[in-house]
Image 1 (cartoon, rainbow, N blue to C red):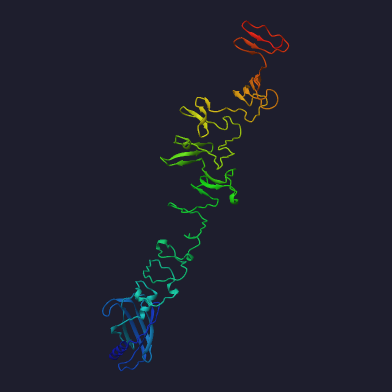
Image 2 (image 1 turned 60 degrees about the horizontal axis):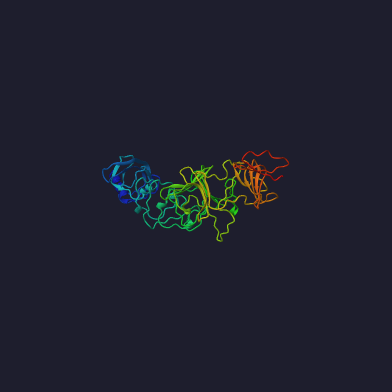
Length: 452
């Protein structure tokens, strides 16, 4: 037994140990000499314990027994496996050995396990690895997989290569510095370049434009539909874009049930409103022409306008006429017509009409002997005063009609002709006879005969 202890002390004092990690196994190699330093040859039993302290302490992992290990010329080798027991804390190896089936002898001091067995920790890290403990380069295969925790790169010297195609959830607020335009997607709007947007864009704040906004024939829509908006309608630039059946060749402001043009001066109020059936012009102004509710002017540089400033035209049976003018409240005038220097025609709310100039009837000289065109009384009554302007008869004279027939004519030279009996309430009767004597005059009458 004494020789065995001496032999074991020789083994432990040699400390010729190499270890190679693979999983949690590591190889243990040693050399065994006798007390004289001569390598031994024979069969020995070994027991290995892993401890967490040089003395006393606690066992770590399971006991490794290696019976019948052959030692040749002092050399031996075998593997040990205590499991995943190397988190980075210090570990000591305790060894018991025997020979020739004797009693195990514990050898002391315990043998410290140095860096080589700890190599297995790198493949199964569970604790914190300090950056100071990592040096050199790590291959891509050693960094593969998914890392779910946060990583902070605070050194401005950090550099990343590649196209960053694997980055997700990277917001603009996390970017610092300038990104080259060539690195941006073609869908990103550039401040100095022309942009074409193909999808719908929503802006939650005010949009300010310091230049023109060109719609290229599209509309500005005010709601989530296509029935309220503003747009160009016409055939310019080959658009062939009609608003209904009309071609306005200009901007159209449209709404589904109507619309309005308003003013916010002095409080919001609509100046012009419309519905599918009517147009209303409203105003709170009063005063001269320039403050009128509606002011329409046809102006040219040479004051030679051939077209009227306003033309009203309607189709169909017009019960109320093309233009219907009325006053709903108050007294005064329904309509007033003038030339800018004053009013020439006034139509009062009581129906009276005042003319400051002449009333021209049949300006086109179209009357051929009828009561119409002329100055008529009632609607299609056949009573009126007319002047034949063409043909034969009382040309350019005056004819007085009742019952659609001319009863009295005044020729252009002043001659008065009556088509039948002409009576005066004072007793004067003028009559042209046609072959028969007139009846006897009544008392108080004076007869003028032209047939005697």
